[in-house]
Image (tube, rainbow, N blue to C red; front, side, top):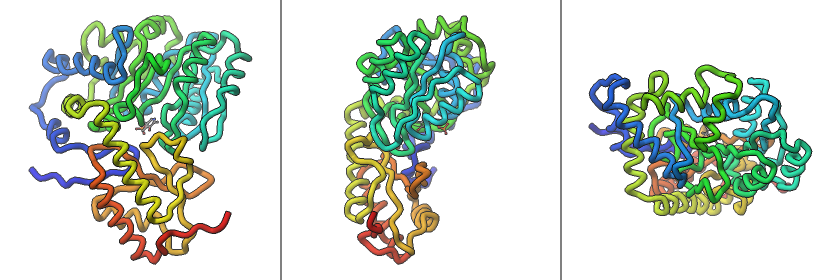
Length: 377
Ligand SMILES: *Cc1c(COP(=O)(O)O)cnc(C)c1O
């Protein structure tokens, strides 16, 4: 079977290998069978290993997109009479704030600029002011909207200093940037199969400290479907997901994890860096500007500012590229027009070189001048 290969430069779902796609084609199976459990048990261990967790960490699988893990962690891990502290410096941490509000959790929101590293002194001040009442600090590892890399290790150290634990949304970094939960003071992290491991959509996972999950049994149950302890306990007792798992996605994830191990952590990260170097080379050659200084970027997302050219039209260039097998993505910065190019997925620098040829041809057809122009600021 021939499957058309598309190069996805959006921030996930990402391009997958044909072998991962084909791994979904399996005989029908009831996921309550032992055969299916025997796939999930090693998978839970593999997911912990990717972030170098030991036996004190576990992983819990959920059927849903990545946001389900944000929801699960925030609502399940807050004891009564304690507060959540969320560092808000981008659209994904704003999502965490929205989740806290939806559950009416006692919330301390530490707002920070979206285009630079957050101020650790302000975070410490907020922890000090609320001495002992903060249960967890939440920060996005890599803000996918802008490409900002957050100082998770330092924020984790602060959380621990004030008796709180750290939850970080690693959805757009996990299995790409090498992460070590112990070295980086991470108590909980999370990801989704369609991003770093280059699998399919519909499977997401929380990785975190067993003892904290076990303590959370006594915390208020704020959601029935999105409860971390309940899903963990069911897995521990039965080896199964509490409710129907995304069966074919799990077969694809098994293959994706095999390919992850074959490529290896360092080599995979080197490939992502190579892709980003290719992206940046084109940005520079065509004279584009990025929204963030490269010194604060993750190296996985480039947020590019729209040029000031009457011929520029994002929709048009998007469609031009899309018709030729390349998907680009709008930005998430409200104040400025931006689009994003992301270094996720089963692609490499040669794909990026091809992409820039197509993109440049598209710009010429639209009559955009090259190098692109920006009005003086
Ligand atoms: C992709 C992503 C998610 C999950 O988003 P969904 O739309 O639910 O798939 C969560 N956090 C971050 C940082 C992400 O990049």
